[in-house]
Image (cartoon, rainbow, N blue to C red; front, side, top):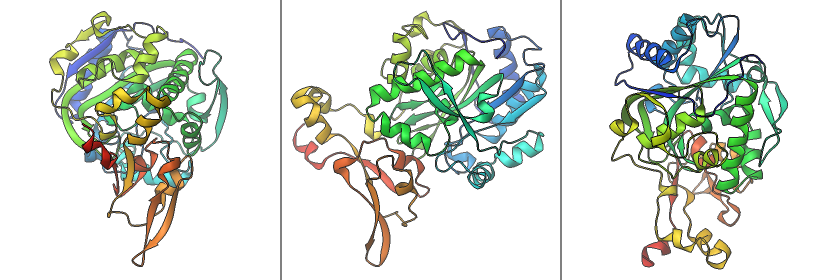
Amino acid sequence: MSDKQSTNFAPVAVLRQTEYNRAEILARLNEQADAIGLRADAYAGKRVVIKPNLVAPTKPDGAATTHPVFLSAVVDFLRAHGATDLLLAESPGGIYSESTLKLNYKTCGIADAAAACDLPLNFDTTANTVNAPNGQACRAFSVITPIRDADVIVDLCRLKSHSLTKMSAAVKNLFGVIPGIRKFEMHSAYPALPVFSEMIVDLCQMLNETHEMLAICDAIVGMEGNGPTGGDPKTIGAVLMSKSPFCLDLAAEAILGFEGTISITEAAKARGLCPESLDKLDIRGVSPKEITVADFREPDATRKTFLGSLSTMFGGRLADFFAPRPFITNRCVGCGVCAESCPRKVIGMIEKSGKKRASIRHSDCIRCFCCQELCPFHAIDIKQNPLVKFLH
């Protein structure tokens, strides 16, 4: 691939933007491009693939997926910077098939937006193994073909909370280049958050070493609470841009008030892929500290409680016993999506009062929260062990 981009200490442009107005967003993106030194013809003659966040088929205003207006502004921006060979490609949660892609594109409002700006959508569901020789947890990944074949990856993420990783931004968004149910296999192979985070960093580092990268983060309206799909929209009012997903995430975590608590970013820091702290990051524009959302609500599964002090007792088994777990609520309609998406196959369907509903075998649950993430009816909550309230 040409123009390989180092991720070390790239500047991050941060600007305020409070509305989904295509012209205004385009103006912000152009300002940011100038700020980080992006040439006017940066993408001329290159195969540019936009990797959005279309984790599940949800409506645009739910804040779980890429906003169609934001996408349209990004397409305008890329064409203004020389891109003529453009494609949007994503592997949503679930089976990586043409029907799944069509459903997500349509429901998320992407199909209409793409048609309006003449943006091709990917329907190639093949994938290829790509080696990651510098990986620390994983040294080979299955990657969807259009991403592998791209010259430039535009990492178009949305700033959200995440029940497993606490935050989803530029680095976590790239997990979507792994096809369909292979993502569930990765969750199963790397069940503990520290090693899962290392694997995500391996993936992002590999993509950065083999492609030119541009990370753009929609933080106009993000998601708080039990993200990445079951949380609530939260106005943040910003747009971020960087040639490094790692550096962008360092700025993003400061906006959410999550500094030093995102395991993916901590793993990136340890490898020298981004500065050790926000004050060493080259910020162009508005300081993340000026945008920080003081009352941003983190996921129930990541909230710090007295359990943190139990993490080393009895080999961590006591903390594991009391840790938050997914629970099926009465909103369950028995569709079976959670059972299909469970990496360890610990969810089954049972008959109760004449109706089907899901049931989780908690003794074998690895708490990846894929079930909560992909449930189309938001029927899965995160709950603490009821004994916790007696132990504070």
